[in-house]
Amino acid sequence: MNVERISQGLVAASLLIGAGACSPRYDSVDIQRVAGHADASGSEDGFVVPEGGVFVFELDPDSVAGRRDYEVTDVLELDTRQPSVARIEQGLATGTWMLLGVEQGQTDVELWINGRLELVIPVDVLAQEDSP
Image (tube, rainbow, N blue to C red):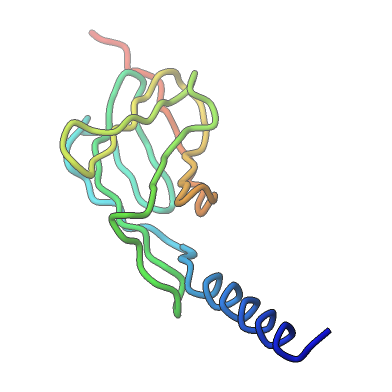
């Protein structure tokens, strides 16, 4: 093997390692309430929403120290592990999300960025109160 090929291989490997080091990793998320049921709430520690209720929010992923921040070009996806308990949909306004309480129980919201699972946030769907 010649020295030029070895040098080219080392440069390519360095670029791949460097690109991986610059890719985002997230350790928290900032959740801002936009609208929703009075008893609904959310933070990175968990969501609470009543059965039949909705929580509308914006979120901003916070990157791990030393990594680049979330950018508009990054693909952000939210999903629930048990859609029979709670569903999540993109909101009507740009950058908003809606968490819908379907049935009393517990599940998790998964935050995926660029195809990688970054955070899991617990969800409690509370029983609907009996109407008088």
